[in-house]
Length: 69
Image (cartoon, rainbow, N blue to C red):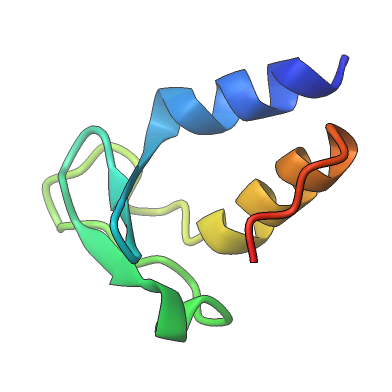
């Protein structure tokens, strides 16, 4: 179900203006760095996960038929 992709994304990330923020450590990544792996703060339990949250958001939105850019 496509909406579960957005729900999963929303559990880990928050979109604030032009930044994606980790809901746990509050590290942020601006949209212009979307192609680079996300860097969590050293104390974050997800610090070893250097995913691409912008790409994940694009894929989740595309699955629902929505495009934000």
